[in-house]
Length: 207
Image (cartoon, rainbow, N blue to C red; front, side, top):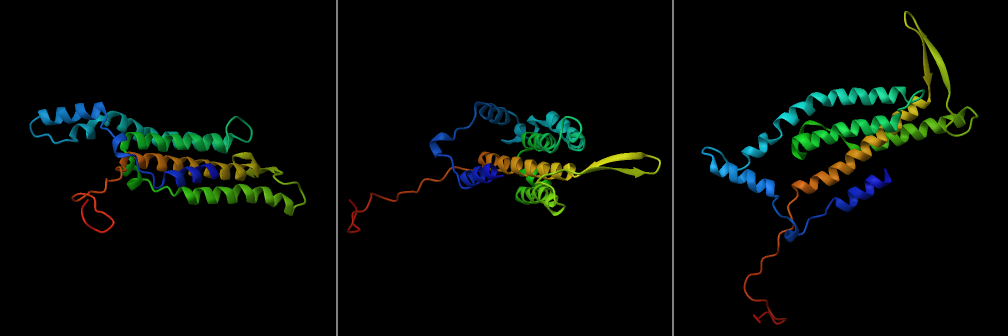
């Protein structure tokens, strides 16, 4: 969480230098193709360039999220857990950014990373502190079995609550870093201050 907040703070107001921003060669080819076709405007090729990957990723997005929840739920007894599940969910969001672009994703997917980080830290820290209330060391886990009719005994553990907190922190931190980086692609460089006429002397007269 500290790393994510640091990266976001450093990149929040960053603007690339004008001389370092150049149009990629692929964009030049796409613009040339749009200019050569009658009835096309610049940007039409760009809109449809990732049409097939975009459709595939939109179908895979809920599948990846379900797999992330699966990793979260099985992590107490088998490989997985809150960190693995959080990284998997973050990959799903990252793929949406790549296929749809920053503006389209943030208009449709409302993820408030700071709230995710805060809730995750409270959940994970609260789980560890709750052990003190029962006279056990910090982060001591308690497990039991819950009997459900027609299903049987289901194992439950307080470690799952801790993993849910870790899951929320990982998703929040990854999305916050992703937002800080992705916004660089839609951020224009700082405009150079125009100079009207020759520079003035300290007395206000032209040099």
